[in-house]
Image (tube, rainbow, N blue to C red; front, side, top):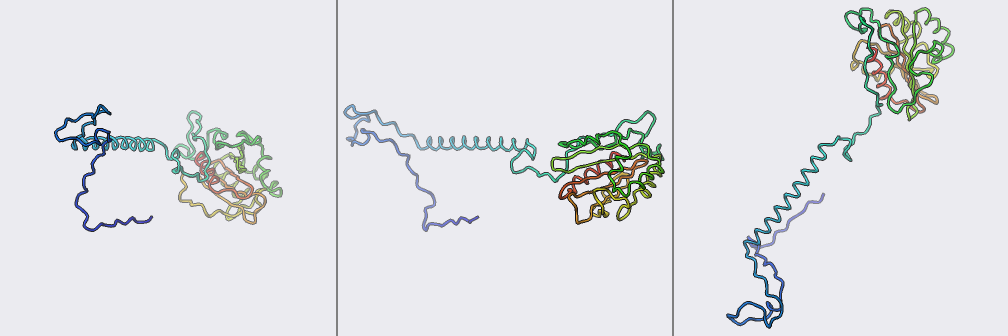
Length: 305
């Protein structure tokens, strides 16, 4: 911005001289009058000149006009300010908050329990058993998603669950399912408009101890799971997660695919909550974004915790 400089005029008068208000000349006013002649038309030509408005009244009119202008501008300004203040931030052009990549999930509610049963991590449920229907504990699909026809939120077979893993690992994992008493498997999947595909599996075992043992013996966990997914042959522990931010009693094991990536990038997480083990898989051509994956895993964890 260029600063404006004011140049002072030497010997300027302290008050500006009054500028007379010009009056519309008439033929009568332009002709000379004899001293003492009456004011009126000369020779009957043209109307008489209007009497001059006293200076005090002219100032009063000017003040009134300025006051009216100020009131109008003030009213307009107040109305505009009130209109903006009454709008949401995203309704005002230039003030909209850009999306950070999170998906629009529906409002989550915990399912009803059978009479006399309690939530898994309450004082009266020391074995941390989920008494709610396992299908009702699946995270719903976000707004704009296209549902997976095979994973519609109901029960699935063991073979459908095993198809997520590399073929060489399936026989051993199938035996682990039988050895650790997996009772039911529920699953839901969807695809977002950007091509991100999500699949969630919930496995209910006979006890919380069995769920932990199945993860250790059947899947393996640590820096990398022993049982690799079909879409991610090599993975590593995702150390970008800030575990102190997690709430609730669930245990998470989160992994990211190791470069070089194939046609798709896959992220995965195992959730251990009482007698239930959850698997969240998210993949996308190019790069699977971290924000929606983190959001999905945390929301599913809340439903289980």
